Image (cartoon, rainbow, N blue to C red; front, side, top):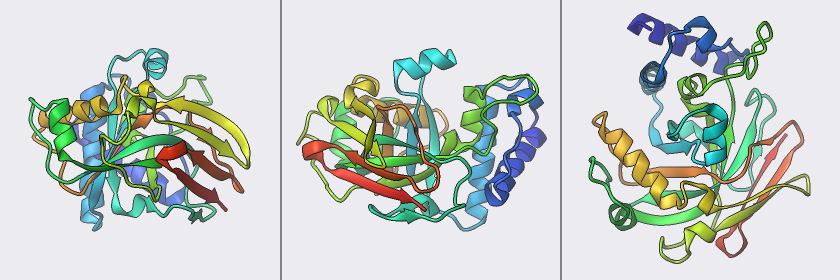
Length: 266
């Protein structure tokens, strides 16, 4: 892909977000597309959002479970950018039409008190830089079709990364905890839709420990001269499969003593 291709793909994705009309698979349009191309498209979206006045409030990490990595034939997570218009209050109602095909995931969120950057970031670095951890829900959406109607091929990781890692929203629960207050590997969630349990999981499903997920993000960002900034939210990765959220869905993620998160879809 050329820089012009990256810009065109980003513009099409931004238009899809506005209109609600999904675009076709980028990997079909650009068969030569690779990981660097995908992040270049995502970066073009970042620049356009910043020009629109949006600010960055954090980062999301995806594909942290081995099951998802095996399914997509990759061996590393991916990441996307959280913008200020993606923040929703615990217990809020998402207006109908706000998203195209929303789904949610339960995650542990890290909120940072100091910057984290550089290739030598360690667990100790992340622990020292974390202000608190909290229960959270990530809202996913796709501005790209999940399946190509003509070929039957599904989205690849390159399509997803280009689409800002399918990122759409973040909801933090009310509870705040010191990072060492819980063994995050054993923090889990029972996630229900309209009162029926859909998914359960444990923090250990995220690279064996959600802290390691944040270490991975900081090290990946360092390769591009970026760093995690104070005050930013880091969604460390889901330990459940995505839950579909059609109109009328009421989502409750019960993290036990760690807290809970609720969000409704009108």
